Length: 373
Image (tube, rainbow, N blue to C red; front, side):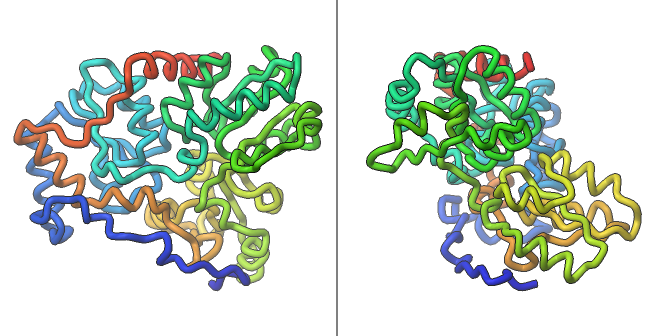
């Protein structure tokens, strides 16, 4: 399938994910990795648990004890008795795991290069500066910040400090309601598409305004009249999907159903049959009847996993060969997993992710508030 008129040089999103890895690990074959990972895990026994995000490549998912979305995996880490939690995901996920696990558990990220671009679009210092301007524009109305799980721990801590909370893609509407019970305006960060889709579902899309942190000036009147201020951040993978892709896949597969993630653009979500988190996408395909066709509007690795896991269902990526994998997730090469596990087996901790104590306390408060809803 072509890209329905949208062309991107995908080489711009790629670089050598092994350049930070010790040279002895760079040329391992899959069979060598599999054997060495198994040997290291046998040495470590119950002292280690390996978590694999849905967007990771096949070899990492197959090596994981648990596979799922970011918050689900953090909960699995907290429930595990393992001394070491190896999180095959991106930085903010490992941070969240460190926030909710016990102090005697150590969280390890196989590659420290795995840093989510969307999380980086709303850094705490930048948000702190914008906060003053937004509060000034809204006058005596109370602003409650909500940050999506896909954000760094310092932003989660900031939201807690300002009376806000964290949300996932599946409970964003509940988080909005929680915030509106305590304030007048929601500042939603960092994903404007999830925020807009949530506002639309709640019937308040016409009372939203976008906040571009890079703009030299802002329309104070527009902010003053808004109920929802959307931070101008987005996921590079999900923003790529267009309505044209939905139309094209339905033209090629007359009976096709379309399921997309709510990080997609509003018009794409409106054109889809089902909109939901990665867990919802997985459940939708699992519940499909044999022979049904489902086009998947999310990161390409999950579409490939679903096609393997459910061969009775015709699973196709929504934008065909042009669908992107996540550049940040790609940095967690299976060779990195081999390295950190063998280092642990040798008594050496590598790539430990540790959130500062005060930041950790506040970030946990933001997560605890989410659990209230």
